[in-house]
Length: 457
Image (tube, rainbow, N blue to C red; front, side, top):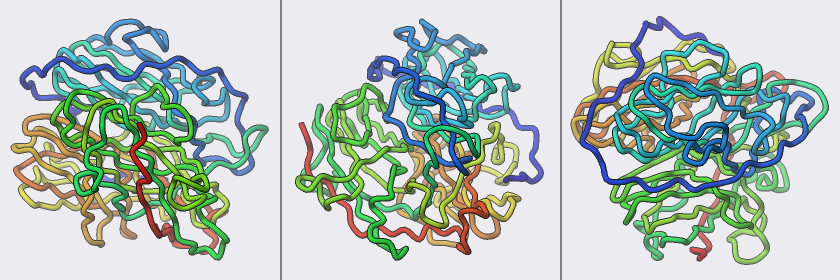
């Protein structure tokens, strides 16, 4: 669904050398899940199926087939289908959380469909000694696997699966999946201004969101399958991790955001939901989510989209792509140069009419100062939410769902100092004739209310 204009041959994002950091915390361990039955569906292609988060690989333990760090200029293959709630057949792409821990050098990882040539793109960028995660959507190879490439040094890699997109239209299986609806960012929780204060170590936030009925339905809440959140740990007291999940059961052994003490660390997250019970969780039947923290930290949660059950007109479906670079300000691609203090850059791409959102990995490259990068659709007011919080001199990336204007453009704003920006596209969300039903592709979903019932210990 996407035709890129004037793409130049760009060097893959490297990483500037920085001072070594203290010892890192461990990402949460896990065990593999049994393989489910094959998936297929009627008119399901491009729809999303959230799964209970599951760990697919941990090089520290040998889960996924490799024990020991991934070395410089080396790759490994990871089987995805048939594991962790992902069906054996009918899957076109997966949503992963990729964690790096204990790297010996500044580097980057690239995740791409196995069997393809390595693209000129990056999925996770990190300095030496870093602990962190990035949300990565990846097309699968023909055998249902992906390749993970490491550029420099040695690093452990941990991968959790959050959901998958159907790659087929018809056949036996799970039935139609969900469709995506982008939203202007809505802040659901900010512990810095909440009377409860920071989320304590070993506790979980019990949150909920209530949606307006704008479709003439009895209750849009009952159609919600997952929330797309930008989750940020702010000033944690020690190294650790956050885990986001549906709630209602034990904390799963995966990590959503891995953080260093005292840092500001965001990550995009697709979080499966369940309806609030009649008591103890805000509005009865509203979509519920929970976020656990291993260390005491302030927590900011922004809602950027909804995955519904696919029965509501106007939802968007996903088309995966091999990662493709569309912005590299270092060589004048997409942006003419580095963004200065309070400067906004406009990026225009050539897309087919049904395309509404770019699924990207956006990277801040060696900013002069600690800064904030915000990405949003051209032609509308800049949101207060942020997408990246890179520190001075570091190269840091985050998954971004880049909503496009009708002209096919988005904007990038830099808060302070000068920083280069790189953006790689891994797929698009688009309308289909079967789902458009005369709509323009706007979300037409509004948040009527949200809250945090309690911190659960």
